[in-house]
Length: 516
Ligand code: AMP
Image 1 (cartoon, rainbow, N blue to C red):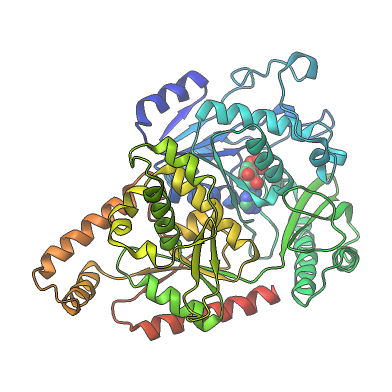
Image 2 (image 1 turned 45 degrees about the vertical axis):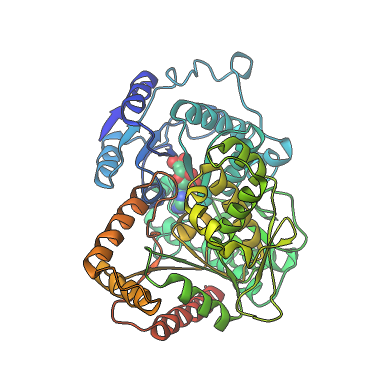
């Protein structure tokens, strides 16, 4: 692992090592803990090169805040990063980041929408999010990562950065990562170092309050006042806490909500002594999402179809979406190597799944309102679909459409990157796998059933091995197990046994979610 303190050093490192490989950036202020490590682990599942930046950004601290006191422990951070397989740390000085003064009039800064910076933490931390947006823009320009990882712990920061990337058309995917908590519920934070053991124990009350609101929400409560009051009541049991704000907002726009229609963010900031802590919880009014990933030939599509049918959820057939787009490209007469024309066409198309009157378990698929359920199974489409699906622009657009379809939940989806990339917040993630030998044996049986006898088990094993290698090593959306996925090894299991396992995991998940 390398450590750079200058922008020249990290630029040169990337120039040498990038060579078309995807880069993930995890921006931090150091004093790394389990929360940061989960971002790094997530980044490692999706990128070949992982860079961690460590920079205590003077622009985001007000003069009255803890800039001087903020924990700085570079050597300890370096060792931790090395242990979890980070490729390089960049820990620049303020001057290296172009911050020679913290006076607004002497710096180019990035100003997020005031509607997003004047609420929640922005009310007391004047200028904080402008400082965050400025430094994140600088880091994104410096590293130019494919993906950057941010914790949901700082939900307002996350929303502002997502908006910044959208508005400034920055070519990076922002990946939100769930809050990591200590076993007793307190969210990890570098500032927890300021707490005495007794205060740490008292600080559990924040999560206890939020969890009570989540429970109330799961029982059907959607209105702001009761959801906020139940948290307030819980926190009042620890008089040492002074609540700075307790708000219910829409998680992406941060607009205050009177009622949760789809999703609400219940966020709190409170002080214990002079330590200010923040925490939040997402309230999702949606049916769960089940994400099933795994290597080719592990039985994903059959299992997914059956699970969706038995749970009464939509089977989101992502393979059919890639087929529909391939059909559209072939129809349009665009040359298959003209990616920019394909990008134009695909970014304007719309794919829908509608209920099939004849066959409930297999919905019809429409592209631009044209029913292509049959047409996408043609030989011509089959021959071209993997080339079209490998195009970056096609995958980006289809992931966007899949996420849109998933907004209200209630789906079971399968693929190679559903749990890691498309629905990282899926309620249940399954990684379905089987040994190469077993997958080859199943494929051989299938081929024999179709009357194809001219292939050997050994040939199939080789083919499957090669396919696994290329699926795991391709630069875009490689096959990876999500860190929170449940692995099911299907070698000695029947389809019924596998689906039963998934259904029982789903039911367990529903009950734990409702009672957390
Ligand atoms: P910081 O070093 O506090 O600026 O945090 C760096 C990144 O780690 C930010 O994206 C934070 O949201 C994220 N982070 C900090 N604490 C946690 C946590 N407990 N769980 C998940 N992410 C976290």
